[in-house]
Length: 146
Image 1 (cartoon, rainbow, N blue to C red):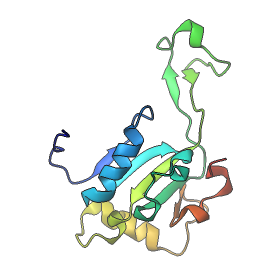
Image 2: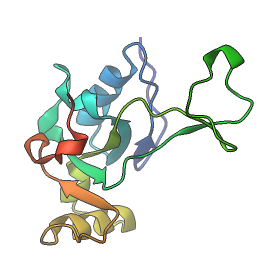
Image 3: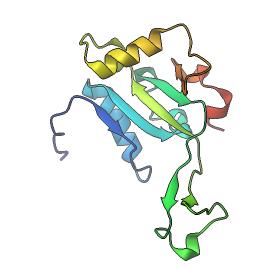
Image 4: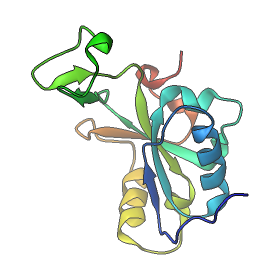
């Protein structure tokens, strides 16, 4: 039996990608009715369970790079991507999956209102750090799943 979620206004998460976490999360936010922003790998939109029509996307112009802080990765798991900061661990492209209700929600809460304004403007400025995309067909080539 699933527990009821805590009271919330919006969901912002970078969920675990193992097991069925992503599938369960995308199903939940698709029926939840609250705005959701999910930072997930690019391959998620290509999964058979993914409810594509429920989402739009915020794709950073520059690929996100994740780091494991120095000393927190076992020595036998070190890679060539080590620096004074730690170990780079970015095996896939990731971007924001945003539930469409955040763009159409009637309330004027600050976050969704700002997102709607940015999303409704004629294209994204080349100076902006991200591109707003309405469908997976419009994802930039560098963000598409292979």
